Length: 316
Image (tube, rainbow, N blue to C red; front, side, top):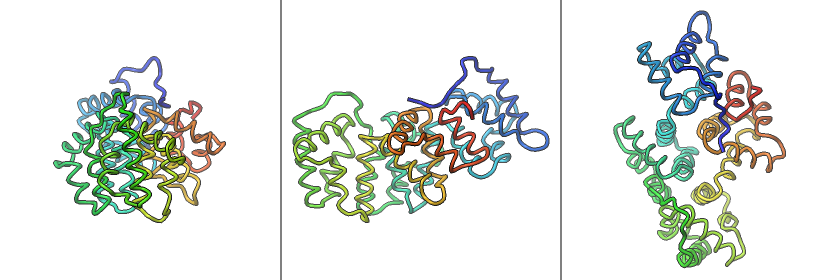
Protein backbone atom coordinates (compact mmCIF):
# COMPACT_ATOMS: atom_id res chain seq x y z
CA UNK A 1 0.00 0.00 0.00
CA UNK A 2 1.19 3.46 -0.93
CA UNK A 3 1.47 6.38 1.49
CA UNK A 4 1.33 9.03 -1.26
CA UNK A 5 -1.88 11.07 -1.02
CA UNK A 6 -3.26 12.75 -4.14
CA UNK A 7 -6.18 15.19 -3.73
CA UNK A 8 -9.49 14.11 -5.30
CA UNK A 9 -9.58 17.39 -7.25
CA UNK A 10 -6.14 18.07 -8.73
CA UNK A 11 -5.51 21.45 -10.40
CA UNK A 12 -4.79 21.44 -14.13
CA UNK A 13 -1.21 20.63 -15.12
CA UNK A 14 -0.78 24.15 -16.52
CA UNK A 15 -1.84 25.59 -13.17
CA UNK A 16 0.64 23.33 -11.34
CA UNK A 17 3.40 24.52 -13.68
CA UNK A 18 2.44 28.16 -13.17
CA UNK A 19 2.51 27.74 -9.39
CA UNK A 20 5.91 26.03 -9.53
CA UNK A 21 7.23 28.87 -11.69
CA UNK A 22 5.98 31.31 -9.04
CA UNK A 23 7.74 29.26 -6.34
CA UNK A 24 11.06 29.95 -8.11
CA UNK A 25 10.37 33.63 -8.80
CA UNK A 26 11.16 36.69 -6.72
CA UNK A 27 13.26 36.82 -3.58
CA UNK A 28 13.85 33.32 -2.22
CA UNK A 29 12.16 30.05 -3.05
CA UNK A 30 8.69 29.02 -1.87
CA UNK A 31 9.57 25.52 -0.66
CA UNK A 32 6.10 24.97 0.83
CA UNK A 33 4.50 25.45 -2.58
CA UNK A 34 6.91 22.92 -4.13
CA UNK A 35 6.06 20.38 -1.39
CA UNK A 36 2.30 21.03 -1.69
CA UNK A 37 2.37 20.36 -5.43
CA UNK A 38 5.01 17.70 -6.12
CA UNK A 39 4.46 15.93 -2.77
CA UNK A 40 0.85 15.21 -3.72
CA UNK A 41 1.17 14.09 -7.36
CA UNK A 42 1.67 10.56 -8.65
CA UNK A 43 4.32 9.52 -11.18
CA UNK A 44 2.08 10.04 -14.20
CA UNK A 45 1.09 13.52 -12.99
CA UNK A 46 4.70 14.47 -12.21
CA UNK A 47 5.82 13.32 -15.67
CA UNK A 48 3.13 15.49 -17.25
CA UNK A 49 4.18 18.46 -15.11
CA UNK A 50 7.81 18.03 -16.25
CA UNK A 51 6.77 17.80 -19.92
CA UNK A 52 4.40 20.79 -19.75
CA UNK A 53 6.88 22.89 -17.74
CA UNK A 54 9.57 22.35 -20.38
CA UNK A 55 7.15 23.18 -23.21
CA UNK A 56 5.83 26.29 -21.47
CA UNK A 57 9.03 27.81 -20.06
CA UNK A 58 11.76 26.23 -22.21
CA UNK A 59 13.52 24.89 -19.13
CA UNK A 60 13.81 21.42 -17.63
CA UNK A 61 11.94 21.40 -14.29
CA UNK A 62 14.70 19.28 -12.74
CA UNK A 63 17.29 21.93 -13.64
CA UNK A 64 15.08 24.66 -12.21
CA UNK A 65 14.72 22.68 -8.97
CA UNK A 66 18.46 22.01 -8.89
CA UNK A 67 19.18 25.75 -9.10
CA UNK A 68 16.70 26.69 -6.37
CA UNK A 69 17.16 23.98 -3.74
CA UNK A 70 20.04 22.64 -1.67
CA UNK A 71 21.20 19.72 0.44
CA UNK A 72 19.03 16.75 1.47
CA UNK A 73 15.80 18.53 0.51
CA UNK A 74 17.10 19.06 -3.03
CA UNK A 75 18.12 15.39 -3.32
CA UNK A 76 14.69 14.20 -2.13
CA UNK A 77 12.76 16.55 -4.44
CA UNK A 78 14.88 15.60 -7.47
CA UNK A 79 14.62 11.85 -6.84
CA UNK A 80 10.90 12.08 -6.17
CA UNK A 81 10.22 14.15 -9.31
CA UNK A 82 11.91 11.59 -11.55
CA UNK A 83 9.91 8.86 -13.23
CA UNK A 84 10.37 5.65 -11.15
CA UNK A 85 12.35 3.92 -13.93
CA UNK A 86 14.62 6.96 -14.39
CA UNK A 87 15.08 7.14 -10.62
CA UNK A 88 16.11 3.49 -10.44
CA UNK A 89 18.52 4.02 -13.34
CA UNK A 90 20.10 7.00 -11.56
CA UNK A 91 20.41 5.15 -8.24
CA UNK A 92 21.88 2.10 -9.97
CA UNK A 93 24.38 4.22 -11.88
CA UNK A 94 25.47 5.98 -8.69
CA UNK A 95 25.89 2.56 -7.09
CA UNK A 96 28.22 1.40 -9.87
CA UNK A 97 30.53 4.31 -9.02
CA UNK A 98 30.80 3.65 -5.28
CA UNK A 99 32.30 0.80 -3.34
CA UNK A 100 30.66 1.02 0.08
CA UNK A 101 27.06 -0.21 0.33
CA UNK A 102 26.53 0.12 -3.41
CA UNK A 103 26.21 -3.63 -4.02
CA UNK A 104 23.24 -3.63 -1.66
CA UNK A 105 21.55 -0.80 -3.60
CA UNK A 106 21.97 -2.72 -6.88
CA UNK A 107 20.54 -5.86 -5.30
CA UNK A 108 17.68 -3.86 -3.74
CA UNK A 109 16.62 -2.44 -7.10
CA UNK A 110 16.93 -5.84 -8.80
CA UNK A 111 14.97 -7.79 -6.17
CA UNK A 112 12.22 -5.47 -4.91
CA UNK A 113 10.94 -4.28 -8.30
CA UNK A 114 8.48 -6.20 -10.44
CA UNK A 115 9.76 -7.82 -13.64
CA UNK A 116 8.43 -4.92 -15.72
CA UNK A 117 9.72 -2.25 -13.32
CA UNK A 118 13.23 -3.74 -13.53
CA UNK A 119 12.97 -4.00 -17.32
CA UNK A 120 11.90 -0.33 -17.53
CA UNK A 121 14.80 0.65 -15.24
CA UNK A 122 17.24 -1.12 -17.58
CA UNK A 123 15.67 0.65 -20.57
CA UNK A 124 15.92 4.01 -18.78
CA UNK A 125 19.57 3.20 -18.05
CA UNK A 126 20.19 2.66 -21.79
CA UNK A 127 18.53 5.97 -22.65
CA UNK A 128 20.30 7.97 -19.94
CA UNK A 129 23.82 6.52 -19.97
CA UNK A 130 24.14 5.07 -23.53
CA UNK A 131 25.21 1.69 -22.19
CA UNK A 132 23.63 -1.17 -20.29
CA UNK A 133 23.24 -1.58 -16.56
CA UNK A 134 24.62 -5.12 -16.92
CA UNK A 135 27.93 -3.96 -18.41
CA UNK A 136 28.39 -1.34 -15.67
CA UNK A 137 27.60 -3.89 -12.96
CA UNK A 138 30.09 -6.32 -14.54
CA UNK A 139 32.74 -3.58 -14.62
CA UNK A 140 32.02 -2.42 -11.05
CA UNK A 141 31.98 -5.84 -9.37
CA UNK A 142 34.33 -8.80 -9.08
CA UNK A 143 34.29 -12.41 -7.92
CA UNK A 144 31.29 -13.70 -6.02
CA UNK A 145 29.64 -10.26 -5.98
CA UNK A 146 29.61 -10.14 -9.79
CA UNK A 147 28.45 -13.77 -9.92
CA UNK A 148 25.35 -12.91 -7.86
CA UNK A 149 24.58 -9.36 -8.99
CA UNK A 150 24.72 -9.89 -12.76
CA UNK A 151 21.89 -12.44 -12.90
CA UNK A 152 19.89 -10.38 -10.40
CA UNK A 153 19.97 -7.17 -12.47
CA UNK A 154 19.41 -9.16 -15.70
CA UNK A 155 16.40 -11.09 -14.42
CA UNK A 156 12.87 -11.02 -15.81
CA UNK A 157 11.09 -13.25 -13.30
CA UNK A 158 7.80 -15.01 -13.84
CA UNK A 159 5.21 -13.29 -11.63
CA UNK A 160 2.39 -15.84 -11.44
CA UNK A 161 1.37 -17.66 -8.25
CA UNK A 162 1.99 -21.16 -9.62
CA UNK A 163 4.67 -23.15 -7.81
CA UNK A 164 6.29 -26.52 -8.42
CA UNK A 165 6.35 -28.28 -5.04
CA UNK A 166 8.61 -31.07 -6.27
CA UNK A 167 11.13 -28.46 -7.36
CA UNK A 168 10.69 -26.59 -4.05
CA UNK A 169 11.58 -29.76 -2.10
CA UNK A 170 14.56 -30.51 -4.34
CA UNK A 171 15.93 -26.97 -4.15
CA UNK A 172 15.33 -26.67 -0.40
CA UNK A 173 17.53 -29.76 0.06
CA UNK A 174 20.11 -28.36 -2.33
CA UNK A 175 20.20 -24.98 -0.55
CA UNK A 176 20.56 -26.68 2.83
CA UNK A 177 23.50 -28.75 1.58
CA UNK A 178 25.28 -25.76 0.06
CA UNK A 179 24.71 -23.53 3.11
CA UNK A 180 25.85 -26.32 5.48
CA UNK A 181 29.06 -26.51 3.45
CA UNK A 182 29.34 -22.66 3.40
CA UNK A 183 29.21 -22.80 -0.42
CA UNK A 184 27.23 -19.56 -0.55
CA UNK A 185 28.28 -18.65 -4.10
CA UNK A 186 27.63 -22.10 -5.55
CA UNK A 187 26.04 -22.04 -9.02
CA UNK A 188 22.89 -23.74 -7.73
CA UNK A 189 22.37 -21.11 -5.01
CA UNK A 190 22.81 -18.33 -7.59
CA UNK A 191 20.41 -20.09 -9.99
CA UNK A 192 17.63 -20.26 -7.37
CA UNK A 193 18.06 -16.63 -6.24
CA UNK A 194 18.66 -15.25 -9.73
CA UNK A 195 16.00 -16.98 -11.83
CA UNK A 196 13.09 -18.42 -9.83
CA UNK A 197 9.83 -16.54 -9.38
CA UNK A 198 9.26 -14.96 -5.98
CA UNK A 199 6.38 -17.38 -5.36
CA UNK A 200 8.64 -20.34 -6.16
CA UNK A 201 11.41 -19.04 -3.89
CA UNK A 202 8.88 -18.53 -1.11
CA UNK A 203 7.67 -22.14 -1.49
CA UNK A 204 11.27 -23.38 -1.44
CA UNK A 205 12.10 -21.43 1.72
CA UNK A 206 8.93 -22.63 3.46
CA UNK A 207 9.95 -26.17 2.56
CA UNK A 208 13.45 -25.41 3.90
CA UNK A 209 12.06 -24.33 7.26
CA UNK A 210 9.63 -27.27 7.50
CA UNK A 211 12.35 -29.77 6.64
CA UNK A 212 15.31 -28.38 8.56
CA UNK A 213 13.71 -26.43 11.43
CA UNK A 214 15.40 -23.06 10.78
CA UNK A 215 14.47 -20.06 8.70
CA UNK A 216 17.10 -19.84 5.95
CA UNK A 217 17.99 -16.31 7.14
CA UNK A 218 19.17 -17.80 10.46
CA UNK A 219 21.38 -20.30 8.65
CA UNK A 220 22.85 -17.47 6.57
CA UNK A 221 24.08 -15.65 9.70
CA UNK A 222 27.08 -17.91 10.23
CA UNK A 223 29.65 -15.15 9.75
CA UNK A 224 28.46 -11.58 10.49
CA UNK A 225 31.68 -10.12 9.01
CA UNK A 226 31.34 -11.86 5.62
CA UNK A 227 30.18 -9.12 3.22
CA UNK A 228 29.11 -11.52 0.48
CA UNK A 229 27.08 -13.57 2.94
CA UNK A 230 25.39 -10.35 4.12
CA UNK A 231 24.47 -9.62 0.49
CA UNK A 232 23.00 -13.12 0.08
CA UNK A 233 20.95 -12.59 3.26
CA UNK A 234 19.67 -9.25 2.00
CA UNK A 235 18.84 -10.80 -1.38
CA UNK A 236 16.66 -13.44 0.29
CA UNK A 237 14.94 -10.76 2.41
CA UNK A 238 14.27 -8.53 -0.59
CA UNK A 239 12.79 -11.39 -2.60
CA UNK A 240 10.58 -12.82 0.15
CA UNK A 241 10.19 -10.25 2.97
CA UNK A 242 10.75 -6.83 1.32
CA UNK A 243 8.95 -4.97 4.13
CA UNK A 244 11.36 -6.48 6.69
CA UNK A 245 14.34 -5.56 4.53
CA UNK A 246 13.22 -1.93 4.13
CA UNK A 247 12.29 -1.65 7.82
CA UNK A 248 15.83 -2.67 8.72
CA UNK A 249 17.30 -0.11 6.29
CA UNK A 250 15.12 2.64 7.80
CA UNK A 251 15.90 1.58 11.37
CA UNK A 252 19.63 1.70 10.66
CA UNK A 253 19.20 5.05 8.88
CA UNK A 254 17.52 6.85 11.79
CA UNK A 255 18.63 4.95 14.89
CA UNK A 256 22.39 5.20 14.63
CA UNK A 257 24.48 8.19 15.64
CA UNK A 258 23.92 10.64 12.80
CA UNK A 259 21.14 10.03 10.30
CA UNK A 260 21.89 8.20 7.03
CA UNK A 261 19.98 10.65 4.85
CA UNK A 262 20.98 8.79 1.67
CA UNK A 263 19.24 5.59 2.75
CA UNK A 264 16.24 7.43 4.23
CA UNK A 265 15.76 9.49 1.06
CA UNK A 266 16.14 6.42 -1.18
CA UNK A 267 13.59 4.29 0.64
CA UNK A 268 10.94 7.00 1.06
CA UNK A 269 11.26 8.29 -2.53
CA UNK A 270 11.18 4.82 -4.10
CA UNK A 271 8.49 3.18 -1.92
CA UNK A 272 5.96 5.99 -1.22
CA UNK A 273 3.95 5.09 -4.34
CA UNK A 274 4.10 1.36 -3.75
CA UNK A 275 4.36 -0.19 -0.28
CA UNK A 276 5.63 2.37 2.24
CA UNK A 277 2.46 1.87 4.35
CA UNK A 278 3.33 -1.84 4.79
CA UNK A 279 6.96 -0.91 5.57
CA UNK A 280 5.81 1.76 8.09
CA UNK A 281 3.51 -0.79 9.76
CA UNK A 282 6.45 -3.20 10.06
CA UNK A 283 8.58 -0.34 11.45
CA UNK A 284 6.01 0.40 14.14
CA UNK A 285 5.61 -3.31 14.98
CA UNK A 286 9.38 -3.74 15.28
CA UNK A 287 10.24 -0.48 17.07
CA UNK A 288 7.01 0.50 18.90
CA UNK A 289 7.36 3.97 17.37
CA UNK A 290 5.61 5.31 14.24
CA UNK A 291 7.98 5.86 11.31
CA UNK A 292 6.81 9.48 11.03
CA UNK A 293 7.83 10.14 14.65
CA UNK A 294 11.29 8.69 13.96
CA UNK A 295 11.55 11.00 10.92
CA UNK A 296 10.60 14.05 13.03
CA UNK A 297 13.19 13.11 15.65
CA UNK A 298 16.04 12.74 13.15
CA UNK A 299 15.39 15.34 10.42
CA UNK A 300 14.41 18.98 10.19
CA UNK A 301 13.23 21.77 7.91
CA UNK A 302 11.81 21.31 4.43
CA UNK A 303 13.52 17.92 4.13
CA UNK A 304 11.54 16.68 7.14
CA UNK A 305 8.30 18.21 5.79
CA UNK A 306 8.54 16.47 2.42
CA UNK A 307 9.54 13.14 4.00
CA UNK A 308 6.46 13.35 6.23
CA UNK A 309 4.17 14.23 3.30
CA UNK A 310 5.47 11.29 1.27
CA UNK A 311 5.15 9.02 4.33
CA UNK A 312 1.45 9.89 4.46
CA UNK A 313 1.44 12.41 7.33
CA UNK A 314 -1.18 14.83 6.06
CA UNK A 315 -0.54 17.18 8.98
CA UNK A 316 2.91 17.94 7.55
